[in-house]
Length: 274
Image 1 (cartoon, rainbow, N blue to C red):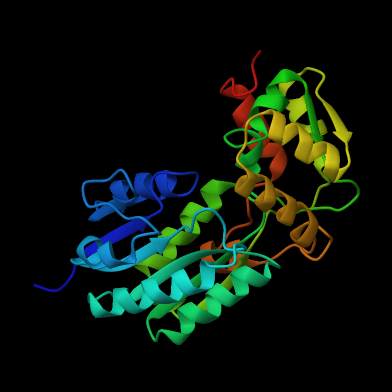
Image 2 (cartoon, rainbow, N blue to C red):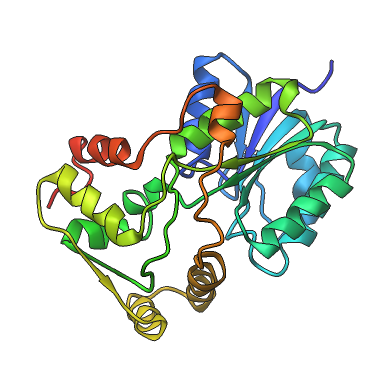
């Protein structure tokens, strides 16, 4: 019997959980692979990957902690080679826009010879509601080292829809898509839209990188995570990614979800309620 499963590497995070919901509705066979699953997957233990991948036909890969880290490209290349040996024919990689490390990882995936689809996503809308920014937004003030640079924030639901399309439609094999929201906003503008959706005052303060790192350290974040956030706010958030991409429309046939719609939906669900 040929391999039949779809494997979701990275667990039920912002995208993995949403992809799982969509695959369930389509009655498609899938399983998660993370450090906590019955057949575990750990990026630090490549010798164990074969036992986890065997039986799958395709995989969605969300790399942790981020493709900007120095060892990401080697890990993605090794994973792709192992996947080929295990009989997988297709990998859908969640990548980042304008990240040199992500581009190296994409090339490593292509070099393996496996069928691929690359989804280059902008910053997630859900970072404000499910990620590191959620608590300060709910508390009434978000302070970041980001000023006038704009980012076309994308809804994680659009990424999940795109990933499911890639996993189930062979027309997407061998293609790279730029997934963004329909308009670019500064972080200050994004917070203002969240405040409007909530009907309350939420402030945005631009701070220096030194102040930002000091606050993260005081909050107990590990050094590697602080270094990662510093790289994301300096290398990636410098204007190179402000242009709106067309990947959502190309893959799904409709515009990406607007940030205001995301904010209204999250507010209605009580996300930032005090």
